[in-house]
Image (cartoon, rainbow, N blue to C red; front, side):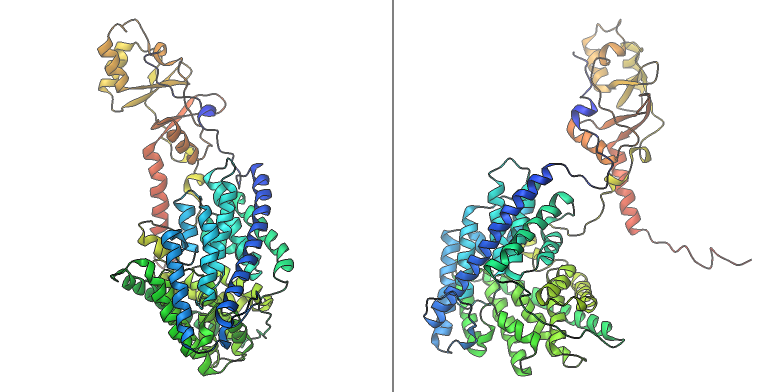
Length: 597
């Protein structure tokens, strides 16, 4: 019909949102089942990566075919110590140039980018080339950990698995992150910290539909871990956390110091990366230059090479000298910054643990208790501050060592480091790279005000309407003289039957021949989109998006009588109120308000 203005019923356009704490349906069970399979794949991928790293390390440094873990502290200080990392960097450059450029870096920013920009779709090349390139990088002396690459590899496994099924981007994201959490769990044996890392870094939400499958993936990985990599904490350690009355203040002070170091490392990393960008050679050669710095650093302190899990263990148990810890801190920081800036492949968690642990160990010499206790606080604080994941840092340290008694000082240290880094730097070491590619990321989670506000709180209650029995000529005259562009049309009982606009009036005037018709003849047969006062504002926004309609009549759910109108401007008022509440400051208990008579 020519004058039709309706655009569909509420049920047909967008079902009203259920007023419940959480939104989850039966598809959650399907995602859990998929996450269990992906968690298994992530655990075996982690086992394979560790074996590849060990095999490469043994071949390169000791000339033997073995997949047993080995420390590079015993590698000979010969010209080969410089040549091996250079050759490894050259191979990685070739893989990145002719295989996939996404293998460059430590993996977590790439996973974040795939989630936020790529619809959680990752390529098979990444799943294959990332662990291979990381094994070469770390095995030839690169000062990296295995966790970043396995997070990306596990994420690729989850993403590839999801792409075989008809899933939404949000569901693919859930399975990608489940694979990432499974990989981290398998490497470190820290399922709770892996899930927290997923929440704080990768999911960008806290919902049952994502949290539960991710937890299922981590649980699946930790079930496989005793068979593949052994059981128990990775670094068994116990210290007496009975601190003096000022002990938590000391832990927070340590966190501040680590936070300052974290901020400096982040700044230096991207400053050095900028220097690489100005080199007059192709980026394919940069990892070889980074390898040169690694080799020269190895000549000074061989223990700074490789993953360094043995160094972490020694920092915790205190079997080190001050000069040795200072050398590890300076050399590890230098070669890690240069090699990571060069675009090679490797993770950041293990280096951060070593750097934070070394600083904590040195500072702890002036505090009561074992230096290893303060080293653990430094590790957690460095992780929490640099990655902006304070809960992950605290729980990660507990799961690594198996000593839950240290949670209070760990929380004090990680929260202090987190406070320092968020005040000093706008972005973390993970998100700065993404920002430099033109993508903005916010990591502050809050309840959506559109999900919290009811339509009755913002709707226009005094609504100008037009009678359905009005003749078309009178309606054209009224629309031309009216102050609104669109009006609801109501019947004698006050129930809306449609909408009429000035464009309708213009069309009717140009067509002519409508003198005997009434508004009800033009709009009463059209389906109308409506909302109810108790619906949340987000539902009205959904209706507007689905229909292109900028005004939604609001009716009484029982009688159907028009009680209000909600417009796009009203939606903006919700945003304005939220912003106002965030910035408005007022003291309620002041001498001027509460004077004693």
